[in-house]
Amino acid sequence: MPPLRHLALAATLATIALPVYAVLPPAYLSVPDFKQCLAEQNHGSHSSWCQPARKPKACPRVSWRQLRALQGNDAVPACRAK
Image 1 (cartoon, rainbow, N blue to C red):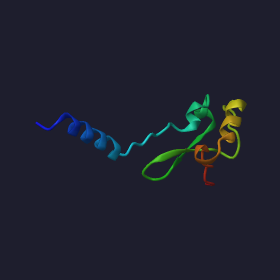
Image 2: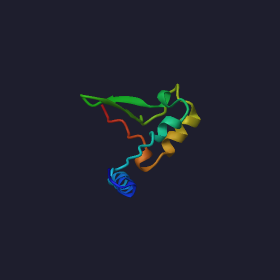
Image 3: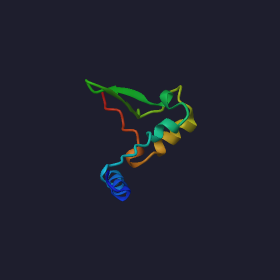
């Protein structure tokens, strides 16, 4: 049986060697009523949310402002022109 220190070292090395990826949920999910403000865009094999150029009538103004304020990777992409 290997000494205890060898097992501890092996466990530590295994923990360090394994990549850890933490994925946070998209920021738009925390915006109230986001579904009333965004549109779905079809990409063939999948669909995704996109932000229309104009605020939909059912979208609360506060939610629209929060979605428009998202920047960088948090920003919802603009819908493609049809």
